[in-house]
Image (cartoon, rainbow, N blue to C red; front, side, top):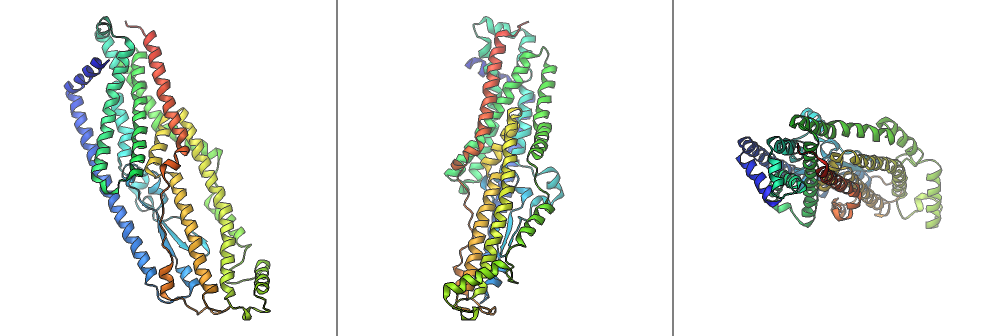
Length: 469
């Protein structure tokens, strides 16, 4: 088997077309990977500068009413991961800047797709594009005639007459072609490590290992399937046609069909319906600027009883701050209800889409690629949740200052000093460790392993039944 593997590689090296294509692929991969790193680092620097600018505005705030500062608000910047340079996932369409303010939970804005027609239609050129579409196609063209060529030339009989089993011949051919894909993959990983070195840590290496393993398994599936087709079909052209048809089905048609199917299974409300439902529930709470209604009266009654006074003017605190916080907490419960349901629907869609990997391993590859790069829906929702937790603490700090900072009810001109605003903590997003998220990708890992085992079983089975004529 070792000799056959080496002999296959000798054949590749002596093939001028293979040599030219390899140089072309390697050069393209190097350029795309390097440009992806540069683009990613530029984006990280822009985010860092914007973040510093926003924070400096907050730190330099002049004496201001705390509730006025809540309306001034702040911004949370979704961090760009180091591996975003390989696979940006859904980042370019979701946006990466979130405004944090009182009374409202906003959506992310400033997505690249919304600012570029080219990106919105074709996406950005990233190594994942080559990993997922071009390299598998290259492997198909290398493997489609590996067996038919040997059979047509009669060389297969010569190899068998030397005591080599057909199983070993086929496995050696699979591994020899697969190794080309793995080497191209490792070459891109090497460039990432060399030029992204300062941004790498143990977490990044774990994610990069998972990403590399996912692609290695997918290339093994593609290569084994193509060699299997070469064994099953009598002609090279038939083998190539069928392999290309499977590639098109997996990468173009099935992902769209699966996407439409999961939308039908777990339909999301339209943006208009969603906003209207939230506004309806929100209007049932206390309006911070025009306090009225049963909840406000109940809060006033409870507060007067707590401080044992008869009127708001006798309170040692500012009742307006309590009303603002009560309004926020009611708004938080509305947010939890509607966004909680929305997030569950999104996760349900993702789980259903992951199951499509049973008939399309390309779906599992995409999920693992985006997940390990930290650019998929799970990481996106994790950022939104952490930003919302911070927003609630941020607004509560301002409302508490308004209520207990020294002012009395009705003193809207009262102002907190600069030291207070400087003491308010900044938002820092902590990316959840991949070791704590791996169960969310277990389906994808199992599906890829299932495909590898299935195809190896089939090719070993075929080796016992195939005709050598």
